[in-house]
Image (cartoon, rainbow, N blue to C red):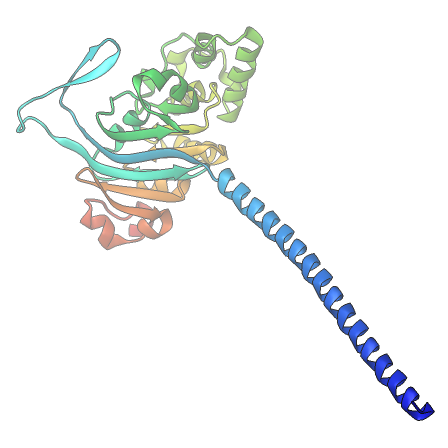
Length: 317
């Protein structure tokens, strides 16, 4: 082989070797880049999924109502369980029929409707004052049954329409301390919870005042405090603004808006609902007629009138 041929052969070999090396290097680099990108993408996806899952877990369903129906038939109690005694169909009146909805942690929900549509009954069913016989209610994951009532009533506090039904001790302090004492908490914890509850409703200065000396507004705040002393996650209020004068009504609105827990308020007072609730459920003849944003529903004159209601006074002037 001549010198020129040898040089050509060496040149071709070098080019081939260089190309091969370059291709192998590119392939290796591509593989490494692909692996790194895959790992990074996987990590990002995992982090994103973890964050989304965490957010979903954080937004907890606190009240779940499934296909709930109820009628005021005669009830009897046997061994701590409710039993329905069937009556003639003409005597039976369905107050609620196939009601289903859920309430998430921190929601402020108004329940409205004309007389007799089941607003108060619905709240009573949530804490077992009336027995659930058809359908299911879950409060913070626990089904509302006789066996679970003690635990449920620690987590979901019910404020009666009539404050006199909730206040039976001699002073405000004694009434607010009653539930913590009966749940076996020690004296220091009872005192802490009692004073904290009174401060949250802005009547700590009335702690030693006699119940009979209280105004209607003070009694309403005291009855709310009796529930808050158990530090519930859910607050249920039945017609809280009834019989309050304008000043006490405004004060109650401020107090409720300062409370961050989940709230469900049944009321005829649509202006009160507008000022305290983000979401509203309209009941009509025992069923859900509408469920949505309070400001939208309570401005809808046609919808309200169709369900036996009128625009809030602040919009009808």
